[in-house]
Length: 411
Image (cartoon, rainbow, N blue to C red; front, top):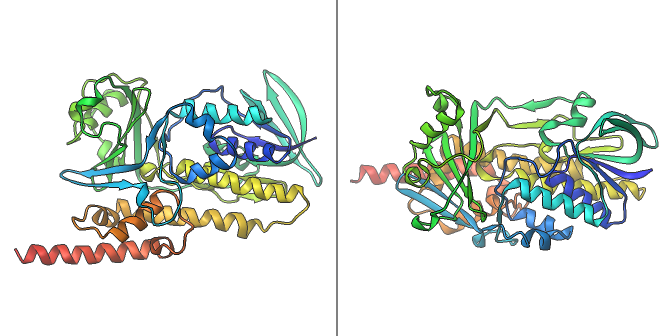
């Protein structure tokens, strides 16, 4: 009997598997895809660096020479704010990476495998039975089904929601009315442009933005996210629609005009989701099922790896015969992250956070506190924007609005 079955080999599954094998537990990872495989979400947050370091993956990632991400640039016509993670309010990592996820995810799972995890690619869970003293799983691999026994299951299958579907949990998809489209291009003349390697978010409308994420391999990820109404443009297909969207840019039309797409444009609608239940008898859910919100602040991988580390440590307690408080130590912990990120995402789209970001005289202390959240440090309750999040953003935006109105009236 193995100790832990991990479902899914994305960042959450890889980090959890690495942690557990480092502690001496036997782990099997079941992944439906063949790696490397495409996935979106190429921008990381400094928070995840702590997780990679803790499980011993940093050296392998550094060896790949990914592009260093020391912050992010937000621009709106002639306004801009350059966020630098070395201005964090909360002490922690001040940099991370922007990565092609196919290569990055492959490195992580291969490292987990090197550490001792058994990894089954192109395999699925056909059946699973949670018994009193064990978990019996039927795993299908290469057309053959076999029975395996485990003490615990960690489901990090992301949007696939393997256990959620098998156990009939509700997966809540928020009807945000937002849509995303994305692709990649190859660049050969970046040096012609200002700050060519800076990850940039260009605000085209209050509820429409354009991401530009350059990679060290010469490719650049491009994507649009916004209200579905902005995508209602006559077009033969998504590729043509994307090119028409690119024409809305004030800053990147010259840089990317005419560039060939490395793959056909892909997209997603109403992608904000969470599972109604995160743990139960001999299982826990980690990764995107704990609550994927929105790509604007790149929180996806950070929340995934935090949930992986946290859940793996609580599984370790269970395997040692201890009784962790899953509600307090896991559910409430992850709820804190989603609450804070929901606040900054919602106030971004309603314009309040944008008003703060693009204020001509943003106070440095406020900038540091918001930067800390954008770095992933959403559990530091000494940060006023963590403790009061939505209310404080609304208040600060209101004050700035009054100041701007007074200044305009005085002209």
